[in-house]
Each structure stands twice: as structure tokens, then as C-alpha cells.
Image (cartoon, rainbow, N blue to C red; front, top):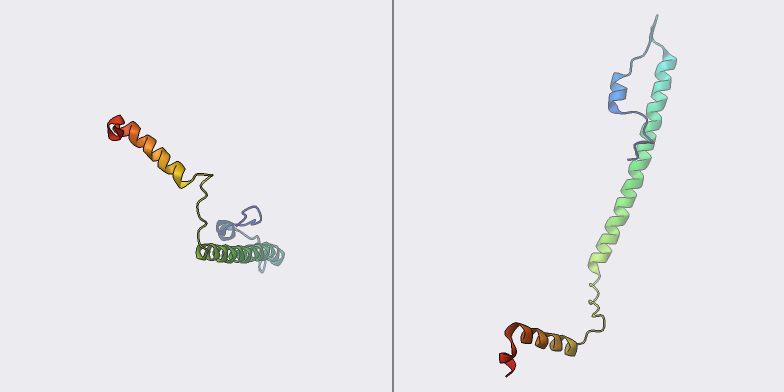
Length: 101
């Protein structure tokens, strides 16, 4: 979740103190604070839904790509003849000229 959109933490909610009046808490303070909480939870819910949709989309893409056959590796113009020639040169280098005498 994008933390700059969320204004309160669980600790903020837990530690919030309201001023008391003759009949208890000031209803305006409680209402204002609850409005902030409601907006935060709406923001979190919207973000959760966006992330769930993105997660589902990425899972579908991963499933689709895993079902496709892997493309054949490109040989950058290398032919079988080129490979055999390189192997021959490598053998000469490793085993010396005795192999080909």
C-alpha cells in the first residue's frame, strides 16, 4: 500500500485521546476522528482491490507465458559447420597436433 495516502496507523488510533466534556467525549472530536479513519479505510480498500486486480492480471500473464513453447535459441549466424570447425580447433589446442598426425 502507498503509505503516503494513509494518514493513520493502528498505533495512532489506539493512542488517540478525546477531550472529555460534562457528558463524556466531545462528539465533534469523535466524529472528526472517525471521518479520518473512514477515509483511510476507504483508501486502503481501494488500494487492496487495485493490487488484487494487478496480481490476478500478472498471474494470468505468467500462466499464459508458461504454456507457450520457449522460442528456439537464435544462433547468431552460427552453423553446424562453424561449430564443428571450432571443436576441431579446440581439440588441436587441447590435445596438440599428435591427434591429427
